[in-house]
Length: 381
Image (cartoon, rainbow, N blue to C red; front, side, top):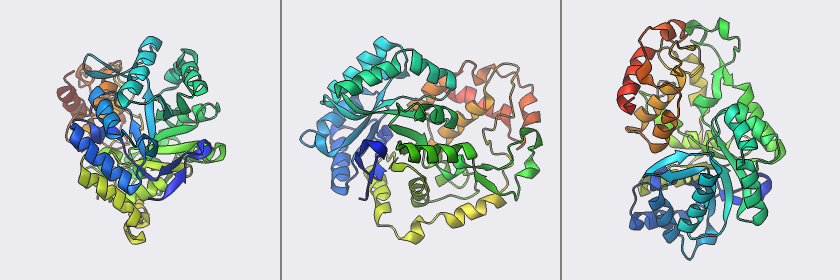
């Protein structure tokens, strides 16, 4: 396993890491099997967004006697209440939840304390002023966490965060379809025809984020390298054909500042397949041909989450609801994080009155009303 330095932290991580989604529902024996595979291959960085106590306890048991071989990216503000995952900024819950996490993991210290899921500037302000950042700094000073991280899908938030100097590690969503966007930034000029055959390019703000992280020494750990599974399925990929897992991994690992990609493997075989990237031939990793074909695709019917559908008279964030719906379709189910993130939306898909205003504004002909109906049925509201 090739090791990379995680920015200015100096921590050495294997370039293939492990996202904890694959640990959910695993028995202690299955957990140990996966940790054994990881240790043998040099997969040492583990993300722990889920507050599921069974995951944490089983992982703690599996690491006994070898804790020093792993780098734990443990999340602050992800707690477990009434048998469910919850993101919180209430400081009593935050403190209690993190202490419980350490206890279940059977450790008194984690390498990365990751401030969990900050996807709006309003939430970032709350993190900075509401006690969360102060708590993270307190943990770092005490040595309970080695460094401070932040997880986000939002480039604007991430740029603001890394520029404060507080954030040592950024967990960010990196894949070709998140990064490659239409070059024309004049939203009034966008229509479906402008995307067909047009050259798409790295969204400037995302490129700026990667470069600033590289410059400031902020290491990036990658989530959503496979786009929630979309990029691996021909019928769901905006490219019109599936990319391979090795192409997606290689794309992420060639972005500036990226040190590690969380694989999110659900089985031992999936984990071994991701580890196989390390021995893959350059031709297997090469994504150039696939990306070169992307400018020639039609984006018609595919939601680019551009926000042109807004404003909705009912206040529904149509693009965000569609994103959550697509994530569920790609994973053939409703992941707990997606359900929680949908749950905190101010207005749900079930409030749609089917006026069609969003569809009239959509440059890509996305069946938004149909999507709202599907999301309401899927999430139950």
